[in-house]
Image 1 (cartoon, rainbow, N blue to C red):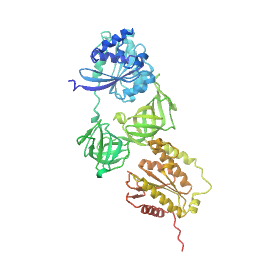
Image 2 (cartoon, helix red, strand yellow):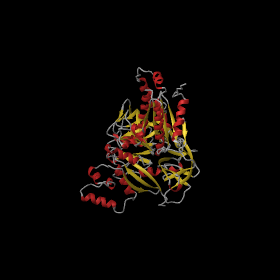
Image 3 (tube, helix red, strand yellow):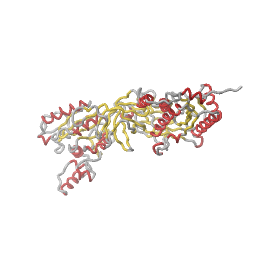
Image 4 (cartoon, rainbow, N blue to C red):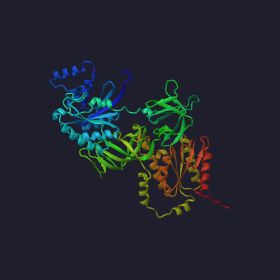
Length: 602
């Protein structure tokens, strides 16, 4: 019975001093879940210090918590009923510790939200209700505590039910129940209250046992956020192991899989773990690796799923609910970092749909920034498309955090995929072109003098950086010796001035593409042939580069593995191809496309 009893995680939230810890203390004591002698030990400690005993003291494990009288951390404790083992997170109610409250609530399948009957609905009562909503906690019961302070009045209770229900309706939350209790006196906590016979529904403990167990993550669609790729080279071992932790679902050898957002496909060849027997199947929660039948090139941060199951979403724009915790406001036109599953990517605030007014019913519209402790509905845009799920589908691949200056500044959930036909990058390019100031020398005049058209030439490929550089520089020299205006730009030159941590980060890759595209626009406008190298680029990098280079075009030369899914390069060479041969083929293409002209003397 003990080993087979199911487990459930719950969180208890509410405004400061509304009695959350007392509710938990009562549950621990009245279900006989305390260590032997613990209750008596706390009572004796209170007596020795001339303090009245409170059930909340059973939970206060930190000295500074008892001295300040507020719960700072999301403390965990355990109690059991005949039906379940419960893990309880006591989330702080004080406004300064809302970050800890989110941490605790994010793990819960159900919640109790405590309201003081005497003090009534307070600011954090509403804020916490909203936070539970956008964390995806669908099972919520409102516990109206301290009914002893209002003489167990049914009228007071009904007024709170009416007012708070109105608020919950405005944020689309449907509570399972409202329960009147006095945690201090034990009324309505474990059993029906003798002093509130007018209340005919469940006690707190009965409501907890009435919550439904969350659907097992193993029964949901398969999701595998890719964390890293390990390559083996010793003893002719050419395996590429795709490593990470399975978020949901299950997978077995032979299953067809797809990676988003690259949309590359393959089949599971083997399931890899260190120092264990070979497996044919893996399930949610396991940290594991896979090899694939066909070698594909994808980057950490991609989301793998089974081809025949429900697909994730792909977009660079999304509608989300967000809770902001940083002292600095969340503002437009600033780049932050978004972390969702294993994806790390730059993100900007596009627009604020509305901000929930936690002190009044309703919303605030028209604000241009989000302040600390605000909860808001927003439109976000990432630097390129990402894969995700919606909150009512798979929570783990919908929840995200936003980082500012290496600190978690906010968190939220994805509500909806938004069309990314019009992006911030496209808006920037449109403004740039409308303001572009042309010189006195026309492009046609430059072409006539230079004996060539301007062109942007990009050498790329996987694991062939040195060969790309050699080919690019040799092409530059060949064109220069024939009198053409040509310039080669090295990878490190693009990010000159940025610190190494930034240039090697995700943001560095995106900044590299942005700077390169802007430079290509300028150098090709001057009439020159511009040459550079790029490694580990994908279709979205190339698409952004194409947008930034416009109205001028570029040609792409792949050396080695073609890592693109949809984009077709102009030339594609095997890794073993000779440098001279590659350069000659590129030169021939430039002639055939009439980028450069050959003068013949008779």
